[in-house]
Length: 207
Length: 207
Image (cartoon, rainbow over all chains, first blue to last red; front, side, top):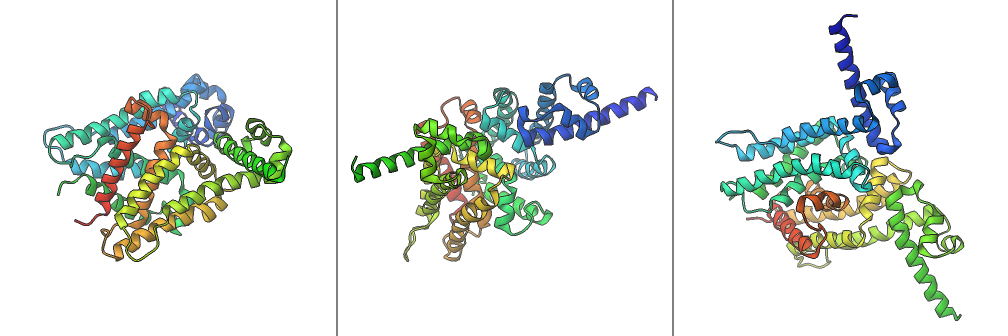
């Protein structure tokens, strides 16, 4: 095996371990999940898992870090003078739905950590979640200053945006029963994005 | 001991068992919680616990039933011709916050059941949660028909009202960190109620 091929295989196994770890940690919590199960499900040896991530703790935090990195990118408004304020709101609403579709277990993992006040909840709050909230609230605050948004309470609006989707995605069996159809079917999600957008633009948009 | 006194003690012990069971089930989930621990914490014998509730399952469902009964009452609009539509929305927003303050573990218990798709999640969805949602959506639908509310998507608005508070109360350590003050302090909650009211009345109220 050449070096390039070995590197490619290494990246692939690392990616697969992360993918599997995300699911298993979300289902069982940090202490309930075992690295043996993660390695077996990912089809790698425990040796390779520890080669990539050293400790279970490191693997867990890498899983969260990876996802929150995407959320930070999503929340960050484009740089520049002429900000399309409402356009960014729309991108965040749509992108947050898309993110949760792709990482259906993210919110379970985070909710468990917050509900149980688990081993890492302080770190997760301070290093991961709080910064994302702050990007959101300062964007709304700036939009109010710029005279584009109404004088809303920034924290409450951001919490509404985040919570509405977060709760929807950890309660899918409930919404399947209420809607009488697949709550994550493409048409249902498209209608949902429109409805959320209508409501949040109503909250933010000046008359 | 006279009969009246024995009855009073019976009601009191029943109430105390329910109060303790609500906390312990929320913290540990149905299977993690033990009736021994619940009885001990409530200061009663296991015999008395089973005298009141027969089975662990019955105790668990009584805990949930008790709380959802209050939510159903809260969601139900007053009868009569001249409905104060916006007044009812305000009462629901404020009352949902007050309910979660009083039953801080309710949402954890429900969220665990939904996330784990636990033994009772179908029953809880169909008999408890779905009816509360339906009271809410039909109220919004009627309000649109009556020409009082804007043509919003009823389901999405109801889900926003429920989720925003639900997520806030299962994430208190996060909001403590973001706000830099007690997220359930009386002034913080009063400001929060005002902000939620401003946002939801904006969504619903016709110009």
